[in-house]
Image 1 (cartoon, helix red, strand yellow):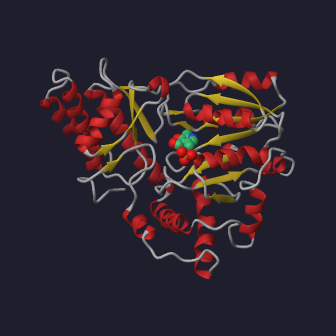
Image 2 (image 1 turned 90 degrees about the horizontal axis):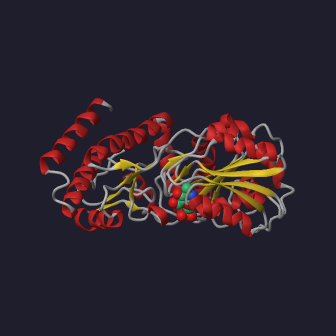
Length: 389
Ligand SMILES: Cc1ncc(COP(=O)(O)O)c(C=O)c1O
């Protein structure tokens, strides 16, 4: 997908992302009421088509909340105080989910994964063997703070062996960016965020539950009101949303789902993979190294050259070159920069990013790379993109 504004401003963060022009048009439409036949039709289409991205036969629910609200919805609908939960914590978002589960009264055991690494499936298998009464395993598909992709398929295979254990997956920076077929892999709860691969503004979370999870939902005792998915299920069954619908974003989501249907999910995954690849290959030639040992296609974390400050690089790129990427958080602050690959991005933007990254390195240390080297990297990247459509 390409941007007409490549020369103006590039939002290359791991969410929010550049919006497609058709999405921007949809967002600019006059408001309509959500209890109207016109909106009912849109909602019906969206509730059907979004299942394609989740790769599920189950219903998908549209929550007006950021991704974190969707994470909370997965917990409150399936768990009860005193339930044993295993949280895989490999960065900021894993920490958040573990905290949420603790806040509601779960007994949370944490597998701490060093930043930049993926969880070892054998560690999860060993924990479940020793604690078969674990009610849920929580994991990010992509831990955005480190750009690591966890082995969701393999984890799901292990967890599937436990009839009373759910696998809840935060796919906020993953769903729509690379394959996570919910039904085939047997994921029990899946949450996505509007501002990531769905290429929409921030403000909605999309969730779905497996049949196995639905058995938990009736008995779950965590307090739930706004996020009680049973209300939404009933309302959706009657062709509406329980609360006021987020008309603007749902209308734009309808457009995005249409675009995805036109190009196909595989093509979308390929497009994002290609952007990740070109970034990974050529940023290394500029002098960065890859931070994630199991890199995600949705976002790339680049360790900045020694003596350089990732925060300053990020700021310079924004102030001078009009490109927004993200820096590192917590222990990775200053050490890495993070480049998102989701949304509406054209090849020219990727090349400009590489060039401006090179120029930014030179701004801080004119010895580290020459202008000739930068243009040769950009030329090679251009050729690579041409040879790998
Ligand atoms: C993996 C992951 N989980 C959760 C969140 C939180 O989402 P939100 O900021 O929309 O609440 C994010 C946001 O970047 C994320 O990347």
